[in-house]
Image 1 (cartoon, one colour):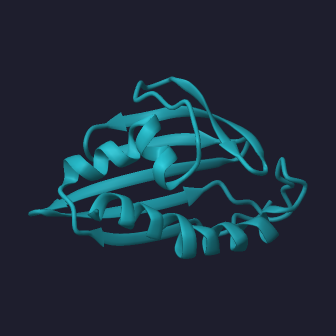
Image 2: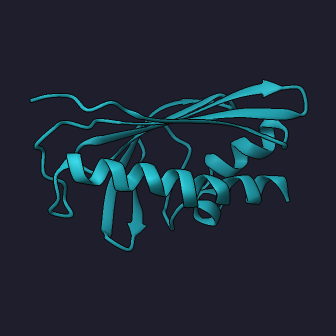
Length: 136
């Protein structure tokens, strides 16, 4: 099995770290820019992301408010949200890891195919929604 590079996106948001943390670590916040879910900021908490492609089981793996949230996503992936305070702005880094060549996802396509779609989705749709949500 060959690992495929993680998806990594970093952006500077014109919002204080606490506002960004609320957006990325509450069910309401995550639903506003990503997808509906029943997330709770409790390490070990099992939750679901309700995607148009099907429900994805997730587990909170790491929680370090207001700097880091890590959760498993579906059967293969891990999403990491890292926040760094830059005065009245916040540097937000998304790492979407767990990609392996030839592995088939729950959606029926291989990681090789899905990774590019997901990378484009983060870049063109999801992260711009996060920016709009926290900068309003």
